[in-house]
Length: 360
Image (cartoon, rainbow, N blue to C red):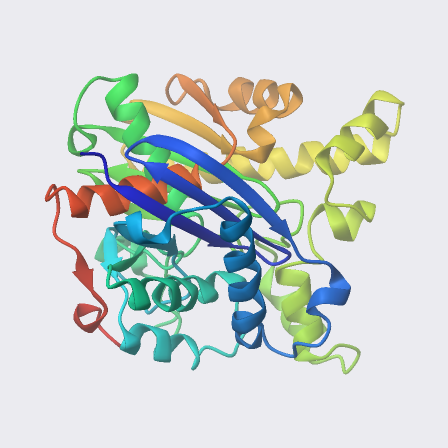
């Protein structure tokens, strides 16, 4: 019998819910949270009660039979760096999330909400492929400063889901036998190189490329000068890195539809910035192709911006020399969460444990 899994994906201004019966989505709903809703909370973890109440109200409106659920699976947040897979949520994981203060993301609420809902029902709570999945090789991890090794973070959930889908539906072989580069481009952007079924290298959203809301890689000396100029606080700089950089800094908007409208109307500056963003993505993927010795089966474009013909045409023109470009537009995180839980419930893989993650 197909397993019934409730999926929760907390974002900065929304909470996405879905109920799956196996691979079939029974319903999905996005709960929007206005600035006024969230204004009382000084820290994202303070939103747990508010979001739990909103979830429970939505499930009641949908008349979901909670007693029929087999599991709850949520988006994984800023865990210590870890391997890919599905992790069973326990109190230690939840307690750890309350220690993450610096640039804490709404995804940190995922395990908290999942356990709160699952525990009274006597069913397991999971997270799957959290943002801190890091399977880098030792060589890829090296930087020019021992105190600052490269670490991987980004859209692991959607990137891995699209890699598995491409392996199965396009290449018709196991992911472990494929060599893939996946670019996720939405409000933020990140890329992953898959070899042997693992994400052996990648580009995080504060490295080589910029995105609608991300500053991306910059020259370090001017950045250091900016940090010590006295004109900016630490929070100012952090907001440039995530939230107020990229298209927002250049054009005052992160809305790619708006930017493309400006381009069609002849705004040459908008075109320069937009093309520069896509150029930075192409350059980053070229670096990952070199890391793969030039042997890549597919380049996969995913995330919200992969819906754009402009984006796809630009990146296909730049990247086709590496490998055929596969477009898998959108975000499939809800489906990926349900699939990860079902693999464990069906005995196809063993759940990972928070206790087994190395702690720095």
